[in-house]
Length: 147
Image (cartoon, rainbow, N blue to C red; front, side):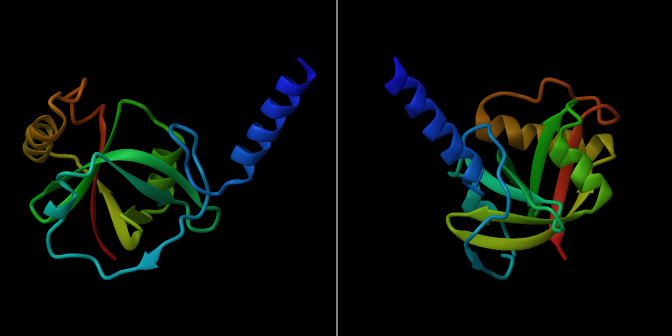
């Protein structure tokens, strides 16, 4: 029993010490090769999950689904006003990591029903499910563009 407890303490300490996000546990500053943003994010279509870093002064990173649409990358938080959403609303600067490459971007919340509908269609095409809440005034969807 004592060994199990120590193993759990060791694993928990290791997770806390990591700066990278792990599954649903957020992390800190992302590492990778700084890369110029692409003209088109379609190369992310076969990639289920990417990493996003917000709050450059105190980095906060997560694993998240992303959708390429109209040459931009989109993130979706649903109705959840999570920490990363609050961070982007306070400071739109973000970094995205895809396959070890880092891209510096800026986030803008989607506010029109037309753009949200196009995002929802692309989201469904990629993940085989639609966003649970499609009310653009309640859901948090962000378009990422070059800084």
